[in-house]
Length: 99
Image: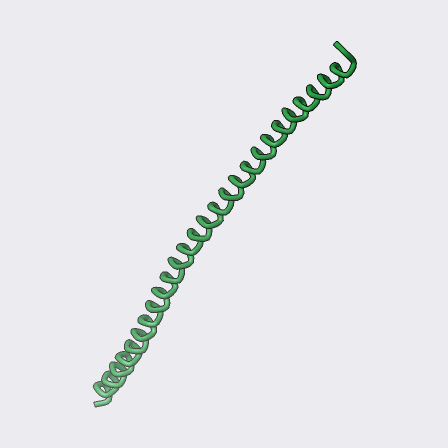
């Protein structure tokens, strides 16, 4: 084998090795990029699900608050009516005792 032929074979072998190494590197980079994209998608999905859960919980709390406010209003109206009935009773009782 001549020196020129040996050099060409060596260069060709280096190119094959470099090409193979580049393929391995490209494959690894693609794998990392895919993995990052999957994690980003999972994180985004998790965030959306958490926001939906918090939204449902907030809606439930708002509903309970509205119910409690309605109950408090009814209790105040009942107290006012009871106070009026009590006053009428005291007035009528006072009238009965003074007669």
